[in-house]
Length: 158
Image (cartoon, rainbow, N blue to C red):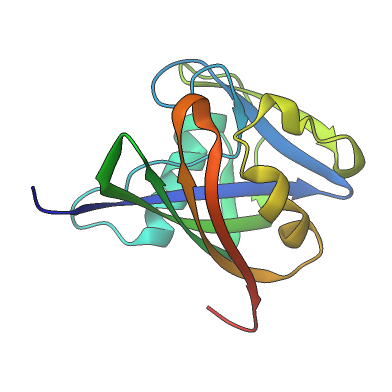
């Protein structure tokens, strides 16, 4: 079987010392807190997809996005597929977060991010994002979302 790569976005919204996370209500990652994002549609730029997903999942409009990371995820039970996730952050947005069919947004202080309710990789790269650093990395997930291998690096530019 040929290897496939899915291009995805993830946006972390920040306001002062707070981070907006959403409880995923359905689909991949349901029951976990996460940033906002999803698939890049045909004919759509990665940044346009990040803005659209943020609007669809949290009801807010990103005015300026900064690309801060590129992460690759593979799963031992499906090694032919890689999720390529382009990570953005924004502090400049319009509107107030609202619950949608897919996500329930909630603000958290940066010092109180509930990593235990998130994907296990988040505890490794979110601190880099909060420090204003750029990064690239890969994670291999095994059974029950355990991390079998990780490779994460701070970089100068994307």
